[in-house]
Length: 383
Image 1 (cartoon, rainbow, N blue to C red):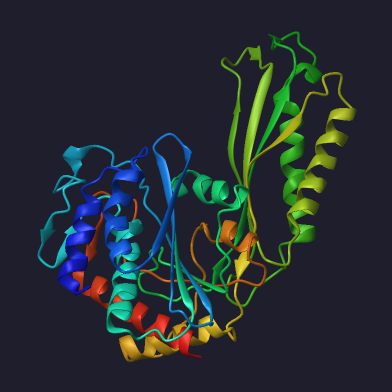
Image 2 (tube, rainbow, N blue to C red; image 1 turned 90 degrees about the vertical axis):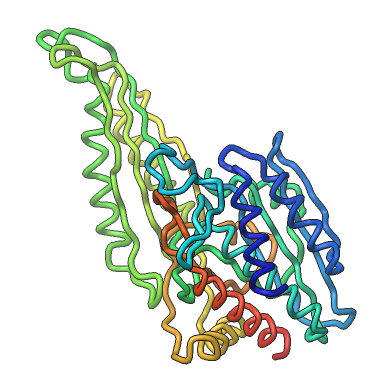
């Protein structure tokens, strides 16, 4: 696939609005191309209009099994009037292509497809296999990849390239994440006469400093050479309607970012113990903990074969040494890794305007990403 052909494919994908689904329409445009290259394409749907694809190609010779992954859903575009060009037009102007998903992450996904196409058509892959894992609903917490995992549809792979936007930086993993909601229930009453124990907010006001202290004691001093440090944020606190009315319900949310050496089960057990202790001393012990999201940390050692091949590909593409970095958010790689113990993962993709008005991708970055992926796939499969 030449660069101009890849750009046309990207433009076609950007013209499909995949905010609330319709991944199937975008997949159809990819499948027709992948099948011509010899990929065995298997689609599945985990919800209405939420289609996903696993597409496999083999060289015919034993060798490494390399996964290539990306998602087709995008975040809402907001007010169209705020955009210079319509968010689903795929407008090309002044060396950039505009549209929701240009950076996150249809651009990176098409760059992977273009690289695989170039290598297959040139007959450059002598051993091993390629496996595209193209997901839906990543932006809502990786629901699509999780569904593939639970259905046993994740292929067996030895390494995985994820084309999330990293501004063309090699990322070897990301911190884990716990998104939690603490809910408390009391009894409404007039603020002048109600007992303090009736106030549903009181347990949460006691719980918040206990959680902060637990973080200081257990995690604040931890560090990872690439992912950095863990973090804790109490992000929402809600209760009540009027100053003179004691609230009968209250809730608090927490965002906890974790490192590979931390045990999510132990963290949750500590929080549940705090909830139980605070509830035990009150006549209204209906304080409860709910897990909204639970995503383990992901980290590949810099000495791993895939990371070494990535650094070599980076030097070949950009003519300078690569600096390894953490990815800023979460990825579908976690669900794929759960079915592939010891999976090596690298996250690399063009783009830096994800989730913004006038999201776009520099065409020069797009072309460089294709070149990088060609070098990386070649280098990994030949090692």
